[in-house]
Image 1: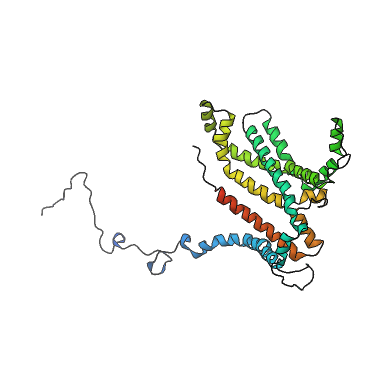
Image 2: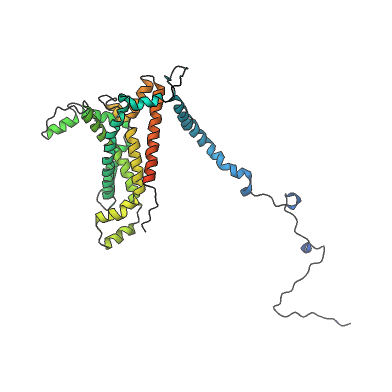
Length: 332
């Protein structure tokens, strides 16, 4: 009997068929735990995964709605009534409270007082921008000067009010310094409406310049240093660098500063309340609102004033966004 051998060329792959019934020939079993051989759903497609972000947002949203939106809605509803803040009875008066705000001279006068702080905020922005530009370059003791400029913003507003109350009083620090310089004055700095508002606005500039300075400084320091080097190689001076490099890059921060300046000039409270209590024509919008609500028991009228302040700030923000949109600045 003759044996026959199958010769296979060297390097050729040989496919061997497993006999039927052997493990190699059987079909792959279904996934364990999946009925009917279906693939189990992963966590990515689970409905619980879609609800997980809302679980984390539940507490912040509840606090925001409870302490922000519900009080605002209540304030708007109070503004259409003559509620005194104590009595359970409320009579709806419609838009009478809003008409009083714009027609009664003693209530409308606070808008003129805000003009002092608005003019002071222009000075504040200019001073902060100047120091932020100067201290962004290589300068000796620049960190020391940064700390000096930002330090007033860290002090409590009530403490600042008491310090400058003694500063501007008759025979106080300001009069003493002026007498050392040979200047004699008997002018009551906080006794005249004009000088009192100018003095209070000056205190606000001293306090909040540090905040605006930090905003500008952060925007300026985010500019790539290669731009300054290229500008210096082209012979550009400091003014050219500010005009063509710094000014375009700080446009969004400048817009934010303008919004903060306008809203801040309307909502000044701490410094004039501590130093004058709103006397001698220094009452601001917020001081007047607080007095209407808690001193004269006119919660409905005070709520209308607060709604007007909110609408003015929203209107200013909308106008600013329309006139100066936040375009992306690309200097590279």
